[in-house]
Length: 162
Image (cartoon, rainbow, N blue to C red; front, side, top):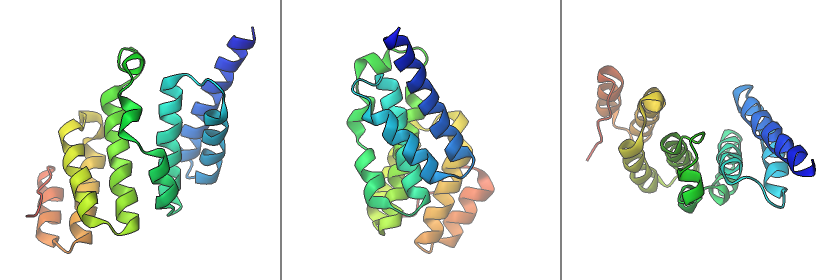
């Protein structure tokens, strides 16, 4: 019964962290993610989500250093995770790369942000396409390439400046 209670607690914390993001409450999200990750043996898929949600929340408050601590590509390479039918690895991989782009932008590392954006383009699932286009537009505007930003926005596809 302790195992079942622990699993319910993990599910609740993941869901609360997600709701915190949706309600624009990054501090609440960070608190929930910390509690989840402090668990001695969190389910790996919940651990991945905890890191992704925490990274996004840290980006929301402009804390790129802490966001990058939660973003490691190895998070998504666990075979148990990839074989879990409830886990959408493609979406999680895109979210991880999306958060890398934002964290690098917050630090002013434009070239690293561009590299991560190219990687994100390769794995972007259809459900994330609009977010990807907006991120592309923002990055192009950030580097001063207004025509590429307008093309990306206008045609609904990324146009990467050279």
